[in-house]
Image 1 (cartoon, rainbow, N blue to C red):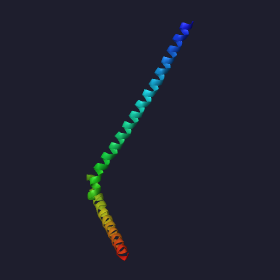
Image 2 (image 1 turned 90 degrees about the vertical axis):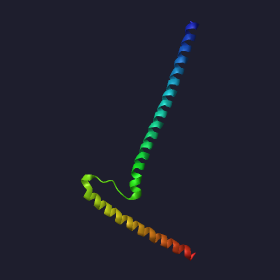
Image 3 (image 1 turned 120 degrees about the vertical axis):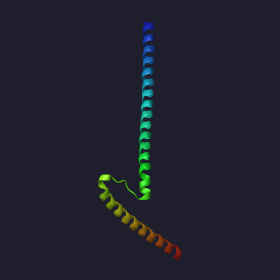
Image 4 (image 1 turned 60 degrees about the vertical axis):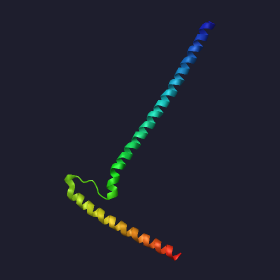
Length: 103
C-alpha cells in the first residue's frame, strides 16, 4: 500500500510540475507573440509615416487622376494657408526680436 501511495505522490507531483511548466512556457510564448505583434504594428506605422513625410515636407499632396480639379483647388488652398502661416510666423518672430531688444 505504501508503494502505491508513493507512486501516486510521485505521479501527482510530476503532473503538477508539468502543468506548471506548461503554463509558464505558454505565458512566455504568449508574451513573446504579443511583443512581436506590437513591434510589427509599430514598424508598419513608421513605414506609413515615412511614406507620407516627403509629401508633408514639400507641401504636395497625393492626387488621384479622377480628382485632378479638386486636387488643384486643394493645392491652392494649401498654398494660401502656408502663406498665412509663414506671415504669422514672421510676425511672431519680429515681436520676439522687439521684446529681446527692449530688455
